[in-house]
Length: 147
Image (cartoon, rainbow, N blue to C red; front, side, top):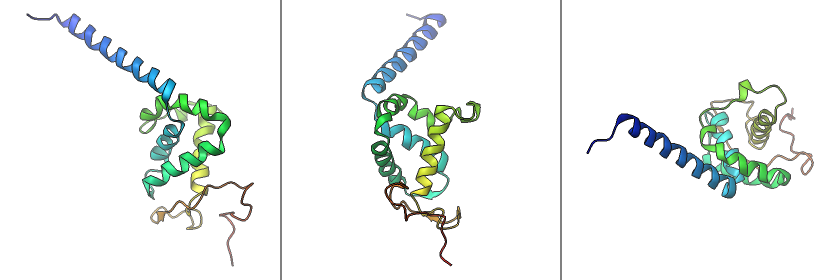
């Protein structure tokens, strides 16, 4: 028994659409809000010499810090897999919600590390220190230099 080419292609497209719908429904309901944070960090900061485990720690602390947006971040976990490789960042207008999220995540992560204390030297290993919250720890300004 042979299957016609059009039926084979239609079956393939149908299976791909069904798998995508199931994945989306699963992530919509049970997606982890930390997944999108880790995906953004892997893509935007992954070229630095960082410990990948620090991404998970930071993502957990970031979600705790932004409790009001936990549901939106859970829904955004649908696109966490493609966000590790590609982003619409350059196509989004300045001030767009997704662009602000990426900027906020990256800047808070870098402020939470010793990156700026090492003069933003990309060749040095980057160590995660603690979550940077200027309201909780006003003395932790990484831009102040002791002379």
